[in-house]
Amino acid sequence: MGSHPGRVPLPVAELRRAVIAAGGPWTRLDVVDSTGSTNDDLVAAARAGEPEGRVLVAEHQRAGRGRSGRRWVSPPRAGLAVSVLLRPGAPGGGTAGVPTSRWGWLPMLTGVALAEAVGRVTGLAPALKWPNDLLVDGRKCAGILAEATGDAVVVGVGVNVTLREDELPPVPPGAPPATSLALAGAACTDRARLLRDLLDRLGSWYGRWRDAAGDADRCGLRAAYLAGCDTVGRTVRVELPGGGELVGRAETVDDAGRLVVTDASGHRTAVAAGDVRHVRPHVRPG
Image (cartoon, rainbow, N blue to C red; front, side, top):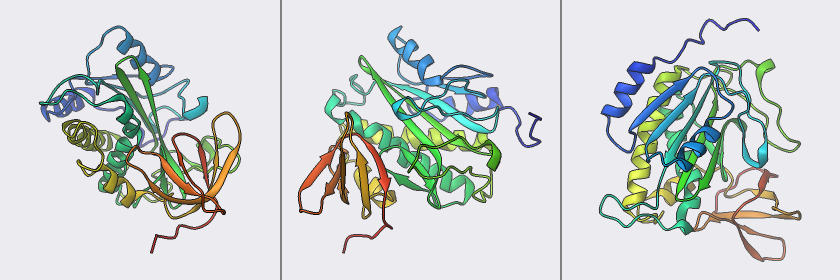
């Protein structure tokens, strides 16, 4: 495949200086030309004792993964593939750390940060699909994957930046069609700027969440997520882990980060994990 004129390498030294100098949790930033999966690499680093704050970016992922082991593929330099290593349970900032029962907020925290960064850089109006997708005009342009290992959580973000229609990844039946920021009409597709803004917003939200010991209401995270979530207010079909499905209206996201769905009989179920399909248009409560 020929090279794309706008697909320039990330300016590693400049990014490293800017991200580390900005403060926050980031202590190390590496950019590699190619790897299997940035999440796999940082999970291995976490198990080897790597401290919190490492950022790993790949210009090309050969075996990028989404939820449920799905592949996330993109031509070299056409997207943003970044993972961060966090240790939310460790004491710091005057708190004893975040209880593991609240770590489920990390994908949604990352989603809020990503939506803010994409909106600021591109001028687009992204929306969040529970629990880990970023949509533009109903099409998926980014996904988030969080993986816990011991006292660490590795959070990976994959963004389609300049992919053309013929380069978009396949999607499962019933899932939103894919797009890229460029195809959606982004005013700017500078990957370096997007990465800086993402790490800035992610570091800010992570610090607030940690300071609140993971209380999503106290730090404002739950309100921010609900304000940007396109799933709440819709009729949804949830494919549950282990089989079975739930159909109903997505009412809210509770304080544990679970999607609360009311079925036709009025029974409310809090869903911690599952593949969500949007069945009907969004209707805000009230």
